[in-house]
Length: 422
Ligand code: PLP
Image 1: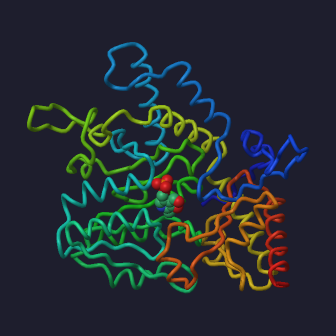
Image 2: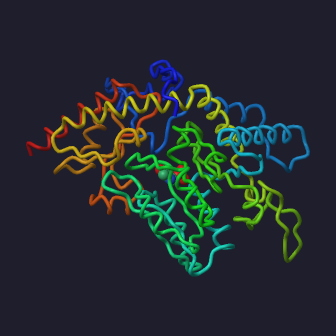
């Protein structure tokens, strides 16, 4: 990571995000001006800059039609826009081929696609799939369902007390039976950044296929499928400034070509007879039905914006915010931050406060206009491992400021005093 990236100016960049100026709880009818929004729920979903919003308007006002099928001018324009968006994703993840990018609804659908298509075709009883204790349910339940269908066995790389993967234990789990290693690049609860290249290298030594859940890393750190050597990578548009309902699966071309379609219908076939069909070419074979045309274009615009800000600058800024949050929270009695040391961590601060329910903390923060999330964050097994039911999660992006982090910590301190008295 290049920490020499010039610092970004969050105050200036915020001007591109109309929603960041809304006032929480404003009710003009009652003369209530509300309070400024402090949006610290970016791991759940990020906000969109005007350029992304405008790209959707442009599609619907100027170029919208169905793609691939229409033999008319407008359809050609729409298809060109859709394909240009795929090229932007291809470049963003450094994939070698256009047809290695499949548009999906998001990370969840991308992983399900692999589990259903690759899993059902290539896995059998006795095979093993290695996951980690850090996983979001999106990278857990599809494999549990595959286990139910074909009898694969799930193995789990444990974390150590610093919420980092125990790679010695990983080595012990690997064997010729290991069919797949599927893991997150960044935990959505602890912010742990996992050693992607190292994990993939070890998995490849036993001939295992690899899948990287990049939902939490792609918005913040470079994604390089070729440098990683990954077979599959999944990401979500809405977590990286794009519209919801669009995401992508990168799949190595030879692997995708060997896989049967996931969903059947229009757009994914070569030919259809009354009793059978032949599948179409990549990537369309995995995109049955009318795709999310405008959201795909919006994802392309989001990638343009990310390139404009720069992922190195984004990561450096988030490290600044996270370090400040750690420093301030450490001064509050009873706060426990669940996560690795700062240098192994993204801009996600998952914490608990002794004797105070996470929902109560989130509520006090909300009254101050500060949006965080409290709960299990779709990672129940991880919370079981940590020995807590819920955590509070503050998650930062490049448009957050040090002042917002300070306000957040001040309100957590206020919550601590409030509940301690009760
Ligand atoms: N993986 C991780 C690590 C996540 O944080 C999330 C969402 O929070 C997902 C997968 C699922 O993403 P989506 O809901 O966009 O499919």
